[in-house]
Image (cartoon, rainbow, N blue to C red):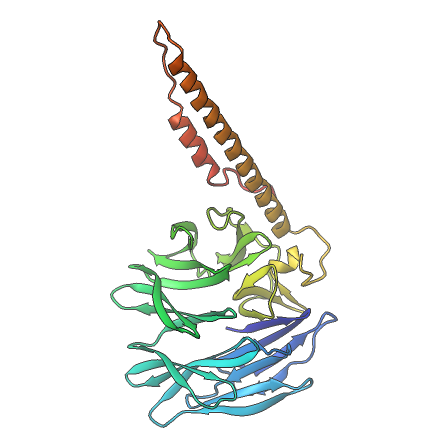
Length: 392
């Protein structure tokens, strides 16, 4: 999967294709530049990050024995041989990241029949093992914070599982986020305020089903389904948790304004052409938390949902798009829910006081009591989801 790096209103797109090999293209606010070739042959084993000075850094693995490290000088890339494997081992899945201004690399090393997760700080020249596996991890994704690296992967043993290795200076911890008897086809992750939000796709009877797991309650909610692969991307942006996903080959979005308790119905995105799901890397941003995003690549690079809301000023955009209308609708409904809950709480308090007064007041006749518990419960259940689709 390709990479989009963002720094100071400049985009950098790193990709690999049969026609162009491995290349990097810059998209400044004024337009785009010609692609800079890194390697003439394509590969799926490459990774990119942003250094402390805001320049891109890239690692490329042309074969199972070598990893090359590219640094940007302002007009071209310098190439350095970073790693060479021994004859009895194979390298795979290099992942480059920056933590506290230091560029670091993790990668898998196969020492038949086992696999090891290795770590090396760029410039140190020595690697150390962090974890070991009996089988090769699948669909690897990762996120970083100033104090930790989260390494996610899928395994199939007696059941399908999504697992995570958390790497900190104090040690390494491993845990399973979820498991399923049905195949986990794809997933996406978002780290926000110390919580990991996960959406994932299960295959069931030839259909693809999208689910979301709430990190606070561990509740799993079904969101939507599709006859074709969904490739979701979850991210947090401006008071909302967003999910972009393909439904029958068309990009849709879902929005939650209550930290994942409920989501809107899927709504078609306003951008539907030249789409690509990419890894997203940036210098720290106040209102965005994302490891994957959908981009549209034509004459300009546009982050599909962000380019249409654009509070941060990622792009110049002047019209009212469906994404912004959905956000405003969601915030309005969420506010109404809060106000209604306050009214219900006050109503319950008054009913309790009335009940106490009735106990204190003698009555000669027995009146029929109204049981309001079922109505109250129904009303609260009504409020837990959006009972009407957004007015778009």
